[in-house]
Length: 133
Image (cartoon, rainbow, N blue to C red; front, top):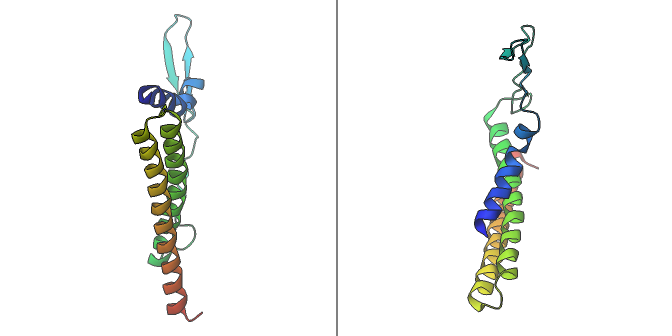
């Protein structure tokens, strides 16, 4: 079961590369008359690297962005762990140990997310107290 889930996850992860393997980052592969492949590049192409912090670059903005990312990541992990726990329960086939394992997975996923929310709330409270709001 885990091998099938891993294979499906890997295929979904690599699907964008499998859909159009002939164009990557503006580079294209063309066939010559002799049948050989040539990699061509656009010489006038420019690449933009945006500042991940936005317009400001102070340390508070950096910590705020890290906190936002961790909250986003925690939400995604919560969703995946609830699905994983539900799959454990669904595939238990009456085995009480597997059902209990699935329930524990869901419970600890929710507890972990609640801790993340509490940490974000404490951060917000400290920020408001120190800024005088």
